[in-house]
Amino acid sequence: MRLSELASRLGGKVVGEGDPEITRVSPIETAEPGSITFLANPKYFAHLATTRADAVLVMEGIEEPGKRLVWLPNPYEAFARAVEILMVRPPRHFAIHPHATVDPSASLGADVSIGPGARIGAGVRIGDRTRIEANAVLYDDVVLGADCVVHAGCVIREACRLGDRVVLQPGVMVGGDGYGFAPGEDGFRKIPQVGGVRIEDDVEIGAGTTIDRGALDDTVIGRGTKIDNLVQIAHGVRIGQNTLIVSQTGIAGSTSIGDGCIIAGQAGIIGHLKIGNGVRIAAQSGISHDLPDGTEWGGSPAIPYRNWLRSSGVFAKLPEIRRQVAKLSKAEPEKT
Image (tube, rainbow, N blue to C red):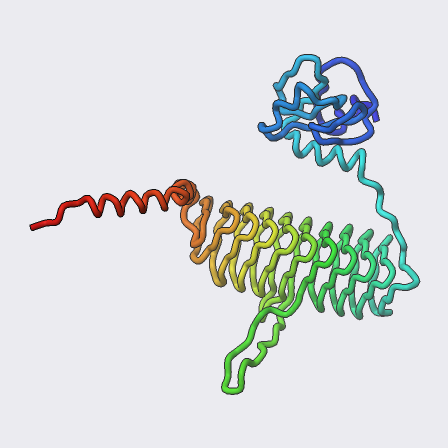
């Protein structure tokens, strides 16, 4: 594809001479002729002068003598679209593979693809153009919207409902039993988990993530939310729209998380909390209390993010501070 055509599809403006053929997207440090790259992080700015790419996606107004640039309001988002245009292969469709098992009562939309070893239970409803890959299992009465992708080895338990354009990466479990046991004289009695899971449109869930069904009400994942690999979401959790949750985060039962939040890796959030809209939580933070809208937190137990940064700077100096305090204590004259 010529650079001029690609730039037009991305909504950008070419700055520089020539209209080379672009075949791929490459990292700025290792790009070769024939490729386009991008600059979104200032730490890579030094590579702009040395990259061998035929063009670079950059913020509007950036200039570099002798380089062919494409000005855009958001080069990182444009990079994602360029990869889709140049490098993402159309999915291979099986229709219904002869080694798939589909219950006769299941309802399949137009152009649904079901891979080998997949099992589709009774009463399942699947929307148009949805793809079910090998060995995925949909229990009875699951509802899947249009244009979804359920990758290999996923399990969606009974009566869970997923909207349109939902993507489940390999090994996702949706609707497993929540962790609920009532203590009694003879040990622990399992509390039946009779709620479900409701996942709204445009959600993506990373490999190995588990989302438990609610004990009574549904666990809910809001529209546009993106969840990384190996995240645990417990029963009755409600997550708002367009929230990002990074790998190895754990969210305990009945906690509510607002819209537009960012929760970094290995954060832990206890149950029955309310996390407001636009909250940011640093990696490995431990959250044990409600967090108001628009706040930033770090550490375990979590404190306001700026205080946590200042405290972190002191941690490494604590042994020396302790020695100084001990020395001063010995030097202090005794009171008479």
